[in-house]
Image 1 (cartoon, rainbow, N blue to C red):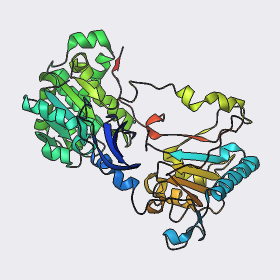
Image 2: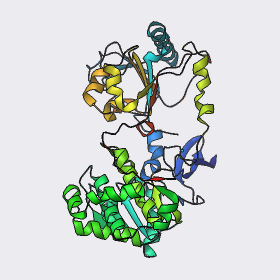
Image 3: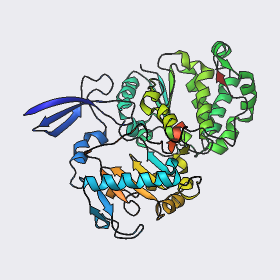
Image 4: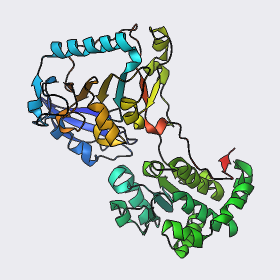
Length: 427
């Protein structure tokens, strides 16, 4: 029997694509975008278009496996593991975690994951460190529509991405100089009286201090840091300030560097001084994740931590500090890690510490994934692999003690070594 099932893409992406899945005799045979979706308009990204290839991949894990080769040794493939039953996997994992919790405390167990499965036009658009055509594909048709009506796309990026190659104007910038560029643009905008004085007086604080600060960033000086010619910087500032509405699409690459948080703050000041925030289609876009907040307390149940044997909130480990957590954290040390929706041995910073930590013989490592044998975390380091295909049973107790929790790097509090004096803030 053939039917079409309506669904939504569950990935960590703001587009929330509508999906139509054709199912025949209990098996999905075709996946496509829902043309009724007002934003994604019936097409899917390259990842989800091939989703059925992943679901039915011949090398997908279908059963739990236990390591038989010593950690850090073996062939680095399936021969290092032996198939076990779900009962055996369940018993070993729960048994080891209970023992570790009893011996060292529940905070010795670390869950580690990232973003796996979770769910108006302008005249000038500036993509700052954003590869829209490659990583924000459903925005691209709207950009093309705007360009047909006369809009201009400017891309600022150290790397000539697909978006940069398709832009009306591409400005390569030296990595880590985004703050200088933003201050240099503000130098031009303020000194040439291109800012919106009325908006600034009503809706911002600190303008006089900012005006004084940007005098240290004339175009000629900024050009030496950024690699962008002074004439181009001045042209960019003037176009941004005078063509309305104008929007900046900034992305996570800008903030994931030293002084990254301050770089985003400096870029965000640009629509503050031009008054672009007041216009439909203006302002700045980074993420909409904070626009529709979830009831996190209902999902995370912090009350259970208080009712547990621990009697308080569990400690938090920043996921970008995993290498330090596995090698130097104590009281208690991390003695078990449960990895899902991530490949920390391949992506976490300070790879040497991460690798050394995962190779600890006393660290009990469980990986829950679809194709874990393809990941660096799994091959030489995992004790038990659980496939993401079906759960025979699950156990959850309201009396269970909370483990150590972790914070993803976009939720972390950043301690910045330098700041911009005269920071402009909205009232």
